[in-house]
Image 1: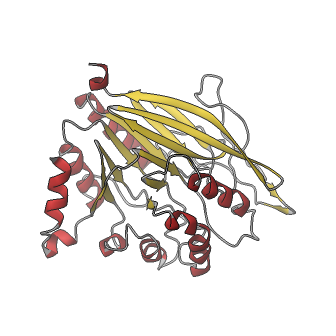
Image 2: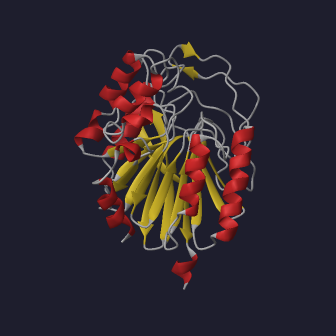
Length: 332
């Protein structure tokens, strides 16, 4: 009933409603979706910023999996510079296989995407799912309904405070979350939990070297958002929360106070070091180019991370992380 009402309400939008953040409904077919990010599509010759060999192989891997995903989440920094039309041409070219397969791409804004005065407008114009919603060119957050889950797609360049447009919208959506919801996904670029190293490292690709690169700490805005989500989780124990983020170019997974945090940012951009601990769910050193696969099975969610390595031009895939989350109703 919830999702039928969402479709019905969209048919009678007033002008005022049309200015509100959109709600996009994805009808489940395979009950599978992918997530990855920090692709930073740009000139393939500048592999020190983003490696096109890995970008292309990641897309090829997602396109040719046995189970076609219903959509792909992108956790931001889609292109290297948002106002550069050449970078968007590279994006269009390298992702055309996904579009040919009718796989929807659902992104959130990253800091590279909003560079320049036209970055956010170009961002919206290059995604079929976002084009019908021009209000996203001014306010870059929206909601996705999918099976018995919801996705709050946030703009981590904008404020989450209660008196801000995004913060007010987000709190209203949290209050309106249906009781029967199994999973609530929060998607944003900047991470709420990360163990990124602050020691600089240099990445070599072909005959080029990157500038010294170092990871990012959790920013104050995301620290406050984490507290808000923990408070929500305490009062909504029947709903499991999963947070997808990017920004630190690697893969991380943690669980704190019943909330699962996944940093999926190995889409091609210059790799960052992560301070791995033996107790981490994933603790392999070095770069981790990857995508994540998520499968909904009733009230359970199965997550898998597939790591890509290249031997010459040959892609080698390994499943390097796997986990299952079950809502309380699944155990009844």
